[in-house]
Length: 148
Image (cartoon, rainbow, N blue to C red; front, side, top):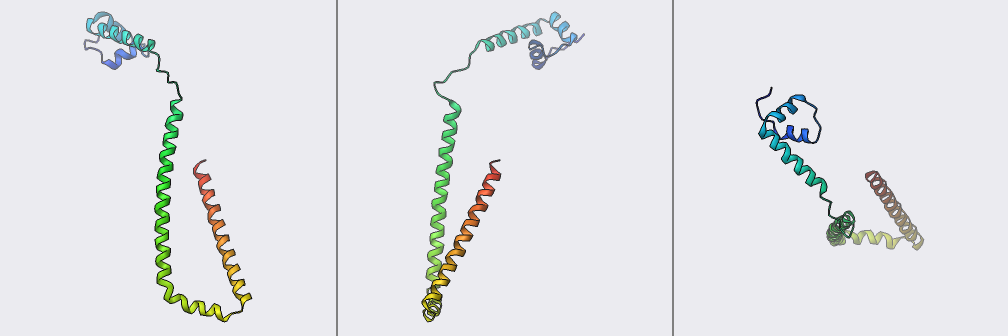
């Protein structure tokens, strides 16, 4: 027979009837210390069974989810402002830097006919629109892959 006292885990398993070891049952019937542990754990388990979970007058999961969404939105908004500011600075710097280079390019357009300028402008706008649509499509495709 086992002369050592049972561990708390073994006593808990016995109380929850997760073990069917006859050595443990015999030890508990003989050992007063382990028997008192069993009684304490039984009382604790009975008390825990009688405790009802707190009922909130609102859906806790929904409240937490909304707060997370608000935090994420604020973080995204701050990031978009920072990105817009950075892009504005880059564009302004590029324009200011290229003013000296831009004059000879504009002289080329002054030497062309009006229809040629219109054709170049429409072509440039179409290319930019196509690239923007393609970038948006790729972004949405990657976003859908993330949420699947």
